Structures are given as C-alpha cells and as structure tokens.
Length: 166
Image (cartoon, rainbow, N blue to C red; front, top):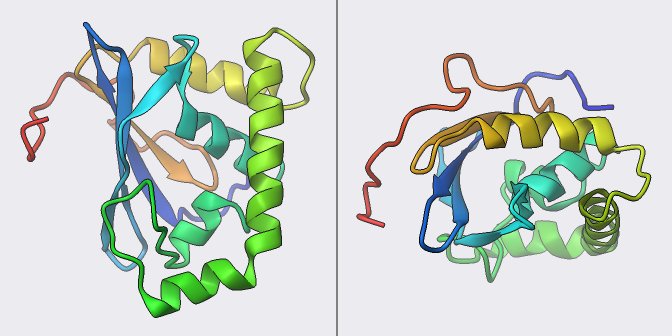
C-alpha cells in the first residue's frame, strides 16, 4: 500500500495529445528544486511509463527506486534535464542494487497489469489509470510522492501551455 507520509516530491505529469500520445513530467523537490523528465510513451494507452514505476515503487514501499532517490537529490545521466552531480551520482552508486531491484519490480508489475495478469498493485494502477484517463489532452495530473495523493485542485487539470514551447 502507498505510504501516507508527507510528500517528498510533487510530480506533475503532462498529457500530450495526438498525433503522438505521450507524456512528460516535472517534479518539485522538498528543497524547491525542479527536475524535468523526458518524453515517454503511454503504456498501451493507459498510463505513462514513469507513472507506472511511481505506482509500483509506492505500492511496495520501495525507497531506493527512481522516485525515492530523485526526492533525495539523485541526478541521473538520462531521463531528466539535470546534469549529474558528484553528490547525486554518489547517492545512486550507494543504492544501485535497490534502484535495479525497483526497475525490475516496476516493469514486472506494470507489465502484468497492462496484460490483465494478477498483481497486488492492481488497485494502485487502476486508480491512477482512472485519474489519467480523466486528464484531457494537453492537461496535467499532479501526484505527491510517496503517498500517490493527488495534489489539491490538480486532478485532471485543463490544458496548459508549456514554458518551453513543447
């Protein structure tokens, strides 16, 4: 079950509509720092890949996965707009085994859910899929990590223009 602790990240997923259905996200760290993620596919049209990993990591209480490490200051070589820092790389190096395990668990449970196979995380995926499907093309969904609570007033928000013109 998801943690109900105070949020350590607030992550806004942006839904990009036709002709190519995909998404991107921007996270705000507890320090106020922002990290922007790259474009990703929407898995079989249900939820974005990174939202699937967020669901798995939260559901199983994984603290050393991508989202937990990002909240604690990790900087990744790929997938975000931040250049790796020595401190951020060291955090990843110290938790490499947990990060790899989180990736394996996230992929397995997200894929099982997509293929309508049993997974204990199904209620978590179903809830996020319902929220994502109610988000209009060009709109946003803001989720707190690790609780997966929807940020107040941010459920299925109307389309917004991107600062970077994307």
